[in-house]
Image (tube, rainbow, N blue to C red; front, side, top):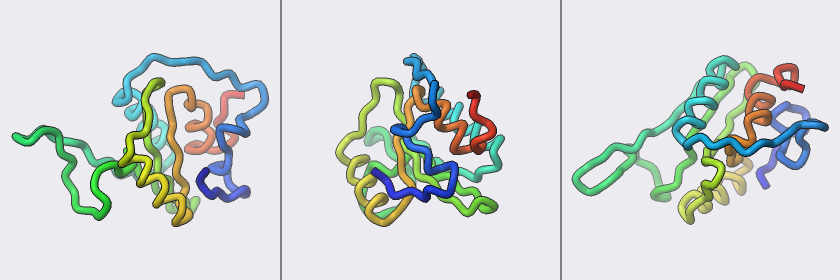
Length: 138
């Protein structure tokens, strides 16, 4: 599990969801979920980086230069005023990390980064982390 500061709303983990919160399976695609998280982040004043894959004659490729190959997280979110940087891999309800993504998760968490995998069932958590505790629906 990623190292987190207990003094910040981002410290809320899946294991410590707000009492009484309900997790419902939501059948949306990963791109739809990513658009939802991006909109929540925008409302919360986050700056975000996402690198979109493009189709080439050699298949799908994500432009960019970085060590470690494939598997970089879907979103890097930065909130200068809250002094937070988050790495989030977004998956559909049935999505799972592949080996490259698991390797980046390992490297980032070992370096102390705030890394998590969010699925549509984590919508309340995403709202809480990105907008703050007062924004939670419960």
